[in-house]
Image 1: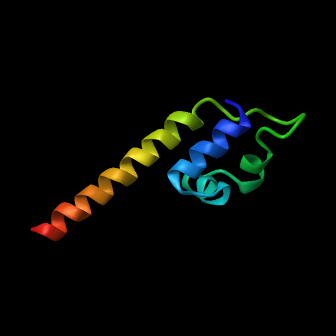
Image 2 (image 1 turned 180 degrees about the vertical axis):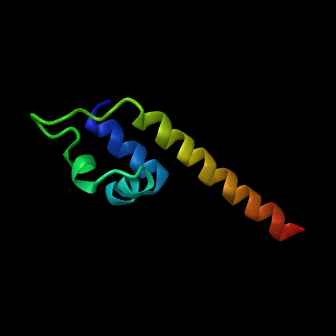
Length: 70
């Protein structure tokens, strides 16, 4: 995955690199070094992780709306 894709997924999920590092139990330094020239690429597992995170976040919002209407 390219760095720009990672940044877009973070933006779409509404989280920062630091928050992602905390969510994924990784060090911020590791996450922050992804995509930097000469450093590790963004791992492929990150894309489905963030896509599922975003879906879960939306489902939680829907759940809260339904519960508040009850």
